[in-house]
Amino acid sequence: MIEQYRITLLPGDGIGSEIMAVAVDVLELVGKQHQLEFTFESALIGGAAIDETGEPLPAETLEACRRSDAVLLAAIGGYKWDNLPRSQRPETGLLGLRSGLGLFANLRPATILPQLIDASSLKKEVVEGVDIMVVRELTGGVYFGKPKGIFETETGEQRGVNTMAYTASEIDRIAKVGFETAQKRKGRLCSVDKANVLDVSQLWRDRIEAMATNYPNVELSHLYVDNAAMQLVRAPKQFDTIVTGNLFGDILSDAAAMLTGSIGMLPSASLGEAGSPGVFEPVHGSAPDIAGQDKANPLAQVLSVAMMLRYGLNQPQAANKIATAVTKVLDLGYRTGDIMSSGMTDVGCKGMGEALIKVLEE
Image (cartoon, rainbow, N blue to C red):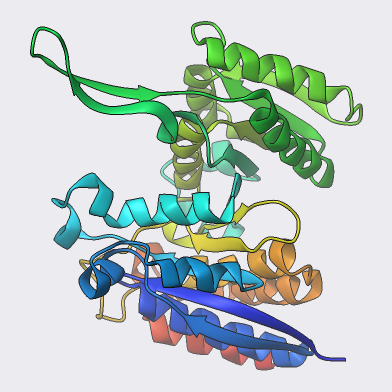
C-alpha cells in the first residue's frame, strides 16, 4: 500500500533553491522505491519572503507548514537584508516558524565520516570515531524570554536587555527528548548548563536530575558550558548525547559541527509534540557568495531528508537508503568544492545530485 505525505518546501535564500532541487529529486526516487508518495507545496520564508511580501514569515507560509506532515527548509538570510530592523530580518522568520509550530527540540548530529576525516582541523586521532548528537531546547531561554529590548535608563543611558528564563515543564520536555535520544544511542547523556552562576541553570540541573530517575539505563553527567566547549575540542569522543538550553545549544552545536571539517555536511531536525510537523534543514547558511554558480554542497540538505524520513515520517528504511547513498558517493570519490581533496572528483551541486541518483538507482 502506498503511503502519502504532504511536504512543505521552504527553499529560502541564496543556494537554497539549488540544494532543495537535489533533495526533492532524491526524495521522490526513494519514495517510489519504498511505496511513498509525496505532495509538495512551496512557500516563502526569509529574505525571499521579505522581498515579496515585506515580512520574513508570511501567515500563508506558517499555515502551509501547519497543514503538512513535515517541512523541508533549505537556508535563509544574506547580506542584502542584514541592515533591516530586527523584526524584519530573515532570522526573525525562522524564530517565528519554530515558535509557530511549537518546535521545542533541535537535534543536531556531528558525525565524523571516515571519507572526510582529513577535512577536520583537528588531529585524526582526536576526531576519528566521533559521533555526537546535540539536543538543543529551541523555543525558550534567552532568545524568547521577556523582558527584552533596548531601553533608556533614568539617566538617559541606553541599556540592552535579554532574559534567560525556563519553566520546569519546558525543561522536563526537552530532558525527556534528551534521555530518549540517549537510549537509542550509546546510553550516555551529558547535560550542559551554567549552574554555578545562573539560577535558571540551577533549575535546569535540578529538573534533569529528577528526570534521570525515569531512565536508569542512561548514564547522566553534567558540565558547565565553558568546560563543555573546551572538552568538545580537547576530547570529543567522550560525548554521546548532549542536552542543553537554547543559547548554549546554539553555540555548542556549531562547535561540534566544525569537528567534521565541513558544516556543509550536517543536517538537523526540529521537533515538537507528537503529531505536529517537524522542520528539517541543513545547519549551514545561505552562502550568497556562491548562489547560482552550481558550487553548493547539497549533501546536508539530502541528509536532512533522511532525518525527515526517520524522525518526522517514521520511515527508517527509506532514511537508511539515503544515508547509505551519501556514503557511497563519497566512497566513489565525488566531492564538492568545500570538501574537495587531492585525487577526488570535483563536481558541482547538480553533479553531486546526479551521482546520488545513479547510486540510488543501482
